[in-house]
Length: 181
Image (tube, rainbow, N blue to C red):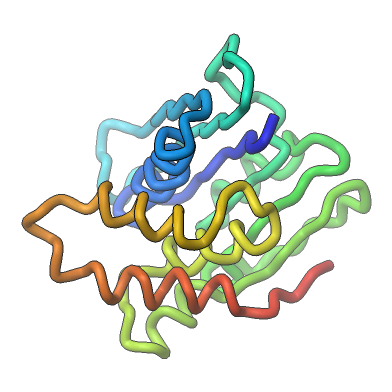
């Protein structure tokens, strides 16, 4: 498996978009992929998560109950999913919004203030893309230029004006030196 990732947070944080962009890279590279979104009835403000599987072989099941990579953008998601990460896996935590740290010693944990970094750089609302850049840096599931192309293809024409900001946010996250615990 090239990438077995669960992304979780509140609706409106770009959780599903982040997963969709990651999944699109696999399509661009002609790999097998699944993207499975899940969200509460509230959507914006409710909980949301999505599972992304990328592989060179057919994917037999799109469900991820034991992710190798977990991205958490809020405290409820941290509490709900931290114990599900496979030993040897990774967790990426938006430390701007989550003030907890894992006590697990069998996984690598990266604490990135992605929401804060986005806001400090005039990229309000793009904390998810900053985080995606860091996930790419640590997992190397695709190339940076492929991810940029994927993002361009996932953004609707009505929001094309966000392309430059999205790319800036992605590069910001990619170049950030995360605090690993």
